[in-house]
Length: 180
Image (cartoon, one colour):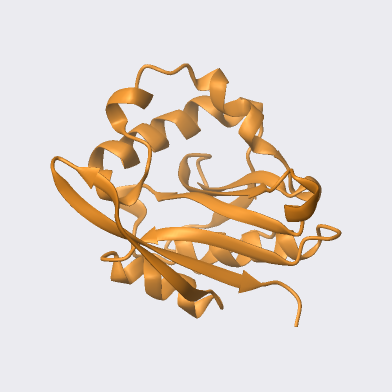
C-alpha cells in the first residue's frame, strides 16, 4: 500500500499483521461502542474477546483475505477495512468488504476514502476475484456516498437487518465489479 499525504499529518495504509491485533481490538471496541447501528457485531459480546482472536482475519492481500489499517506518523491505528474472500468454489470470485472503522478523532479526513480505494486496488490484484460486496446501514448516508463514489452500486435493501435497543435499521446491499 502506498502512503498517502492528503491529511493534516501523513497517514500510511498497510495490511494489518499480528502485532497490530491490540490496536485493532481497541479501535473495534470503540467503533462498536460509539456507532452500534453501523455494525452487526455488538460491543457487549465483543469487548471481552482477546485481541489474539482477530489475528486470523488479517491474512494477506494476495489471498483476498486481509485487513488494511490507516496509521498516523506516530504509528497509531486511525482506521481499518477488511476484505474476506468467499471460500466456496462457486463463490470464490466474490469477496465481502467488512469492518470499515475510523476513530472518531480521525473521521471526515478522507481516511475511509483511501482505505476503500486501497482495498479495491488490492482486490483487483487477486487472481479470479471479480467483485466486492458489502452491506452498510442505509441511514448512514455519508458512508453510502463514500461507497458510491468508489464505484459500488446498491442492489437491495434488507429492512430491519439489525435491531439496536429496540430500533430497527435497514442494511443496503452494494456491489462493485473489479474489472471492466
